[in-house]
Length: 181
Image (tube, rainbow, N blue to C red; front, side, top):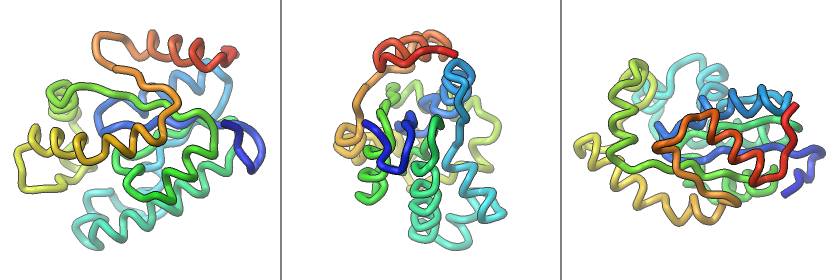
């Protein structure tokens, strides 16, 4: 669970809309650590949204940028890293994430994820559709496709449904035996 590059980090994985970024901010505040969102890192480096990267450069180019961002983020210390939903697709990312500290897989039902994405005003501009399926069917297929990879990385699996982000942060800190600042 410790980072070969120095200190420990805490990694949040899961499908888009499971609350990784919100939870990263709460955990960072409680631990007195920094937090980073890999998708935001990619957007800053590329100077454009993820949707634009997918549209203009294609998914393979995005995944290359993602791998570089993750490699850089896991070298940090005392950082909560909220990954993009597809960060687990590449084996090199899964290896990097597992080596950086405990990995928490945040889960929600496809219906809950769909509802959250629909109510997020930035979804259409920042998060590209990956298929021609309906939004809900895309989520169902995406979860099915990535499940094994999420499981492979996870030290802890938690549902984000029917629990507040604050309550979830408390559970994570207790389960991983991490002291609040």
